[in-house]
Length: 248
Image 1 (cartoon, rainbow, N blue to C red):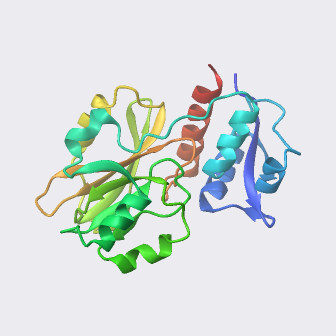
Image 2 (image 1 turned 45 degrees about the vertical axis):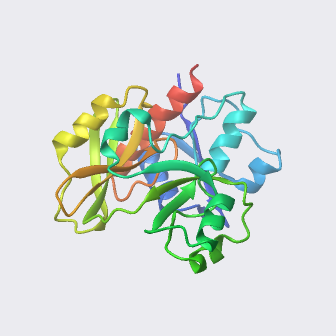
Image 3 (image 1 turned 30 degrees about the horizontal axis):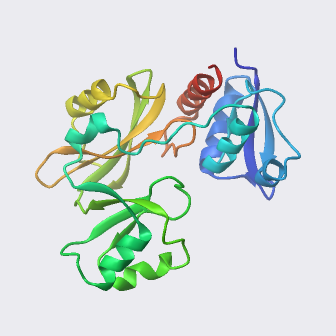
């Protein structure tokens, strides 16, 4: 059902990032025709792929805008699916930057807190807040911005496990000791429990000093870093997730 022309985001004549390059490499090897586009073309309304069945690769904001303009409701990104809460191993709640700011001023926190955007994932990077000064880089952001708030965990290693059609496609270490590996059994339990999972996604998992494999977060497969996974596998995941989104 998908067409054999793929559009991949560029900036200043180069692929937007290494993920876009890997997508270009994978789709080219799979005999797709690859054409570039830019955010400026999308945001100005001057450009749109001819069909929603043309796979598009790029930043989350770009992909969501392209989907909307083709009449497709962008997926809701679920960082912490309720089905996977048994593997969080930490307190997690929704708040706003203003509420967190107020508590920092009053020194109500007894331990560091990790804060990340609830909806707009590109608004700022996840931040560890231990004191009022840690809030300074976030000062220009609307205090009503909803955020996820969790207690801090210390991971010996962090891995991204790529899932395609409920099967492990690949796994890549991206932080910490690469010689410490997560439990495959626990990862497979997470996959089995994630009832409403997209066809392709990434499970970020970590290993605690006590040995438990825990969930860090989930990343939707339509726009996620490949962390060195082969370009062919990466393009397969992108294609499968795009088809799932547009064939409704």
